[in-house]
Image (cartoon, rainbow, N blue to C red; front, side):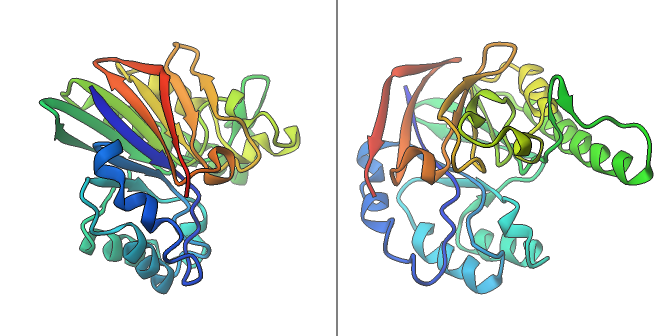
Length: 250
């Protein structure tokens, strides 16, 4: 069994430091790894990244994350990534990592992802150059996620994104903004590999649970949705045991 703690959209700045740490210190008793689904900061500044590293670095379990749209706001994403990496936090963008946990190999493939919408209400790669560029960005993120997932040899595989791969976990958000919260291409990428679980954030008013068209469990772990420091998901081989999801308060 592998226990995966997950959260997203923690939006750390100096006023948040200390809020999550008490629950994070209990992680070794509750989980084997912590996955964070982007929006680590409010405005993507180096100083905010340093606050995040103070809060989420130096834990007794591995920490793996992707960046979110907020982490790109100040165009300092490379510097933000370096701060996190220097703190021992693994940052994925079109990459995968494999962790040895409890005698099992957990593979995590991650990307920020992008918007674009879902079947019946999505942008298409047609028309103006601006629209082609928009959809091209969506497709590039999905492609790198698919390739990263397919590159991994492991016992259990997790997809980690910021944007949503399915519309079900957006329920509660205005329909008009679904296209800015995720895209169907990410769901297709997840289904292209033997993915056991997909985690995302971004949709603060969304719902926790959904599935890809191929049946992969999807969980929206945005902090405003789970309302906890993290959720814990028990991953057994290539299935997620949703009967034992655990909630941990901040």
